[in-house]
Length: 230
Image (cartoon, rainbow, N blue to C red):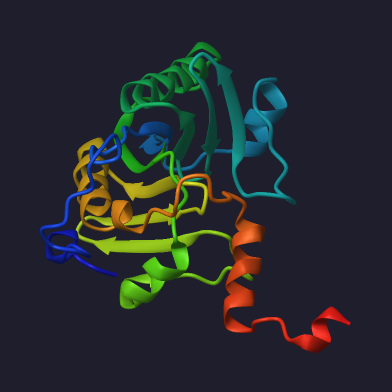
C-alpha cells in the first residue's frame, strides 16, 4: 500500500498529449451506510412474522432483510438495533433510504428512531477508454499492487491515505472502493491516473480481453518452440 501523496510519477515531466491527458470522470455505483434504530434488542423473528415486508431466515443469515423501490435499496436489520443500507447511488439517496426504512417500521407500530447515520463505503467506477498494460504496471509498482492474472483478471492497487482499493482491468475499466467520502475518490483517482495509469496505456486497437492478454503474457514468458508446432 502507498500514501497517494508519496506516489511518484512513473515518468516525471512526461506528458500524455491528446484526449487521454485529462482524468476521465467516475460514477458512484453503491453507497453502504449504517445507522441505529434506537432499540437495544430487536426480536427479528417477531418482526418478520408480523410484518410482511420483512424477510428473516436465521439459518441462512443473522439479519432480517427489507427492501424499498425508491430509492432502490436493501436494508439489513440486526438484533442489536443496528442496520445497514446498501444499493443507493449517492450519499443523499443513502440517507433518504435509511430514513424511509425507519418510517416504514414506525408506520407498522415499531417504536424506532433514526440515529447515528454513517457512510461506511462508497463504490465508484470509471472507464479510461484504453487498454492497460497491467503486467508492466505491476512490475513498476510491485510493492503497492497485487496482480495474479491466473487467479483474478484485475490488478489490485491499494492506497493508505486515504485507504482505498483500485481494481484495474485490462479493458480500461476501474472499480474504486473503500472511500468514506466522494472527495477521497476524486483526489486519489486523479493522482493515480495522472501519475501512473495513463503511462501504461497499450497501443490503440489492442485486445481488451483479459484472457487473451493473459495468454500473451504466458507466451512472452514461455515462447513456443519447434515441438509446439508438431
